[in-house]
Amino acid sequence: MGKPLILGVSASLRNARRGLGNISLIDEIKNLKSKEDLMIFLKQEAEVHLKNFQESGRSDSLPFDIMYANLKKLKGNKGLSNSEVALSSALWSAHSLGCEIDHLSLAEFYSESGVQNEDQILAKLKKADALLISTPVYFGDRSSLGQTFIESIRKNPDWKKAVEGKLYAGLAVGAKRNGGQETTLIYQILDMLNVDMLCVGNDSETTSQYGGTGLAGDIGAMPSDEYGLATTMGTGRRISRVAQALKIGEGYELKGKLKVQFWILQDSEGFALKKIQSLIAGKNIDADIVDLTTKTIHRCLACDICPTHVSTDDEYRCIIKSKKDDLKEIHPSFLDADGVIPVIYSKKDAHSTQSNYQKFLERTRYLRRGDYLLSNTLSAPIVFEEIGAHENMHIRAVTSMIRHHTVLSKPLVGIIQNDQLLNEDEIIDCFDLLLQSCERLMKGKLAMYSQDQDHLKYKPIGYVLSTVKDKEDEKLSRREAMMEERYRRNEKKLSEKIEKT
Ligand SMILES: Cc1cc2nc3c(=O)[nH]c(=O)nc-3n(C[C@H](O)[C@H](O)[C@H](O)COP(=O)(O)O)c2cc1C
Image 1: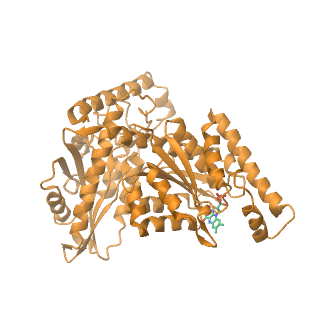
Image 2: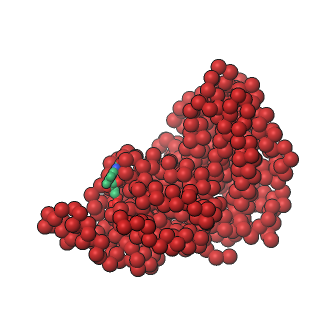
Image 3: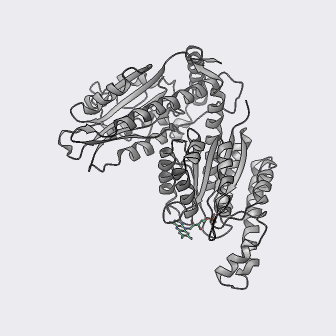
């Protein structure tokens, strides 16, 4: 079994690399032995890029169009634009964790004179196991190069086939703090889910959930954004680990059943519940439907010690202990879910709507801060949306669930008119795909525990608790004991649920 190949896609309009410069960039990244070497390299290449601008006319105050034409005459084998710096750092992380890497510069294929050699893009997409797209932020969204690329995937069945079921993560670099990096990443996640890719965000070392976010306006500025680079590198690690898990999982087959948990979070007269019951009928899965609309879920207290203490996953560790609150009772069922599916019925007229949607999600904070209990679990919302409701619940569910370090697959959005599901066939097909993705991921996640690959046995740290608590005795060793228990639980599941082919 080979290493997964992560294809870095640059959507920069100020790109420095093209042609043979793509190949030399990959060689240069692979030769960097340490993070310190990487930082020196990024700084040096960003400076070269700035120098190229100066020599192409900036120093002589030439108009930008003339300078741009001069820049295009360069070989394309030196320098890095801001979003290329971000991409290079993420590719370096992916490579250091054991993935193969490649680079594709969209500007090379989509120029003012039209589209050139698009087949080369398709060839690269076919070879790749995962896409890592880096874009500058333009108007709180992707660049037009990124847009053309995504349109090509949507338009062309061969392209779509080439990416289906593969992994995606994104990086966005903007000139302003909060300049739209997160909106850019979220829109792109939704588009990639739509073409049936699986999506991940960042890992747990920095808080930038939807991917890497860079702050850099001027040419050459990105290497100074240390925190931004930490988020891009985290995204590189995250895509690398999940890509490897999926690859390892290919060598296994399912022996037990998938456990899929459905969270009915918003409903009206049991409509969504009935739809889920009919969707799972006849499926060979262990379905656990938790109808949260009928449960009492108190609001989060927004306490400052969440989770209440460090312990093993089986312990309910939310501060709310009221007997009237139902979360403690539900807690054990979170432990062994292979997929978590938020289910929402969104009605135009909300009179009869019963919802614990937001209350429940805020209460799952202890699962996230309790070292990402749902890490690498597949998640995809199922939303039944009445025409005209406009609640955007699938978007909200996706952006909340990615914060649990789940792996996202395409949301299922059922269109409702006069209580009828208009796109039933589509929902049935998408549900099958969802189960397939859930199985692939579950096999990979469990198989990781059978391999002697410590770097994949990622130790996510949900939160460093308060300073006082940090000083608490044995906190670290308890955390280690918690991870050990998680490994053992997964190893046990491994022997029960999957076997080597
Ligand atoms: C047309 C245009 C729109 C832009 N819109 C935004 C924006 O909405 N938010 C932001 O933070 N930066 C914005 N920027 C700045 C770029 O995202 C920023 O300069 C980035 O570093 C460019 O990356 P690159 O060097 O890889 O091309 C915009 C730049 C241009 C040219």
